[in-house]
Each structure stands twice: as C-alpha cells, then as structure tokens.
Image (cartoon, rainbow, N blue to C red; front, side):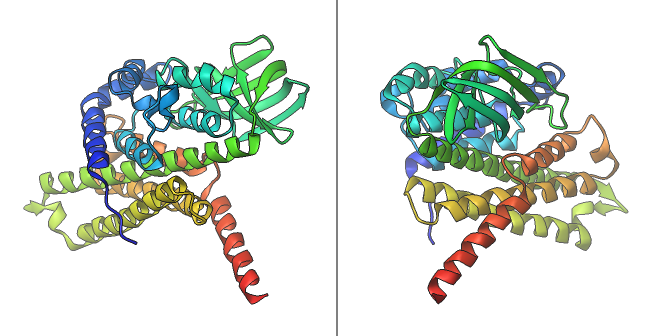
Length: 355
C-alpha cells in the first residue's frame, strides 16, 4: 500500500504540530494536572482560534467536513505533547451524532461541539437500563467525566445522550494515574435521555473515532519519547563520550524506531479504511489500537530507562508519557481484547474460505 498526505493534509499536520508544541507546554500541562485535569485556555484556542474541535464534523453543522485521517493528525500532535484536552469523549460523541443522530440532535448539538462550547465523555463500561426515555445505572471510567456536560452511553441496544447536569445525575471524580485525563463515575437515577435515531451506526462510529484518537495519540507520544531520548543521548556524556554512541543504547533506539514506523502504518491504515468505508476498517481499527498502545508503552518505558536517574524524577516529563501510555493501553479495550477480536475475524474468514 502506498500512502502520502495531500497538500492540505500536510498543511494541517504542520499547523497542529506547531500549535501544540507552542501552547501545550510542560508547565501548562502540569498546572492542569494540579487542577481539574484540563487546560481550558488550550481547549478554547484549539476550538476557537483554529477550529480544530470541528475537524471531523459536517460543514453544514459548523464543522470542517474532514475525515479520520485529519483527526488522526490532530490527535497525534496532541499526544506528542501529552496535551490535557477532553478530546476522546469529544470525537466519540461528535461522530455518534454525525452518523446516527436525528436531524434535530445534529442541529442542536453539533455546532456547539464544533465550537468547543460543551465537553463530552463516553462510557465504554456501563451498567445502564432504560425505561421509556429515562435511564438508570452506573457508568464508570468516564474520561474527563467530572467536567463533562454530555455523556454518550449504550443501553438496551440503543445509544443515548445524557445531560450530566440534569436532575438525577451524580458524578464522582477519581484520582487516576494519568492526571491529564482524569476519570469519573456517573450514577443515573431515572434521568431523561435522548436516544440516537440509529444507535448501532452511531455507536460504531463513536468507537471507530475513539480507537483512532487513542491510537494516534499513542503514535505521537511514542515518537516524542524517541525524539526526546535521541536528543538526550547527544547531550549526556559518560566515560568521555556521548551515551548515544554506545552500541547497546543505539540498539534500544533502533528498536523504538522500528516499532513506531509499524504503528504509524497501522494508525493511518485504520484512518483511511474508515474514511473509505473499506471492508478492512474493523480489523484495521483493532490492529491500530492494540499495536500503537503497546508501542507507546514500550517507548515510554525505554525513555525512562535511557534517561537514567533523571528520568525517574518528578521534574522530568518522562513520567507524563509513561502514565499516558499506560492509560491508553486500558481505555476502550486493552490489547488482549483487541487481539482476540482480530483472531476471531481471521479465523472466521479462514473457515469461510475452507467451507
């Protein structure tokens, strides 16, 4: 397969990399971590000045009308800086509405999402029941759930939008490993909710966007871990020579680079497959999420070890990458779950040919 960015996509990539490098600094991220886990000024600039909150939303509802490839570019740039943004829930709800919402829901919510006026979250694990248009139960592990306005949740075979500020909602925030993406638990007691017109299509689109977002974040984080470690290897001198000149050190860096390039292929294969409606979309999504998350975790661990003593300190950013990598591994299905899905699909395809 040959893949190359269009001129417009290359421009988007350059713009978002520059934006996050300049604005999602370590100081701002640490300040957000010490507070509510979100850099609101960064989110306002992200949505308002650059219009990136609408990157994958239809133009008729205030979005940019672009696809998953462009979304992956944005998420990759954000991941490279471990940006404290509520991007995951945002893209999941946005795609669910775009692909499965009623016209009234699209008109009411998509422009607000595109403008960054509301914060969204989504439930991967939820014990929810529905009676009429009211839902009850518990939704756990909600990214930025304590700050969110809207919740996307699945119950009784449907996908629902819940106003987290409504009567009957109780939200409890948690202290989590990745403080740039804090989790929360929502308890719903007969809360009024809106079902999507096509819940199956909406939920499928939400998961696809969520997996691409996480996989691309992992790719960006892994590349940044390698780049920062290479830079350190040229600065640190031991035994009268740069530590990057030692063979064992170079081998670790080479291993990181090989894994990252494979992850890059997986991420943009998945994004292209979804945009083109390919039959390979499902298997590519599972592949991208599992492989990229594991690659990031490996690279983040190597980053700490190859920085030596300073890599273990709170003052160094290596731990930010490690915590984000560990969080991504578990979000929206861990690697084992995704690989089991791939194995089942391959087995089913093989049995079909044999039959």
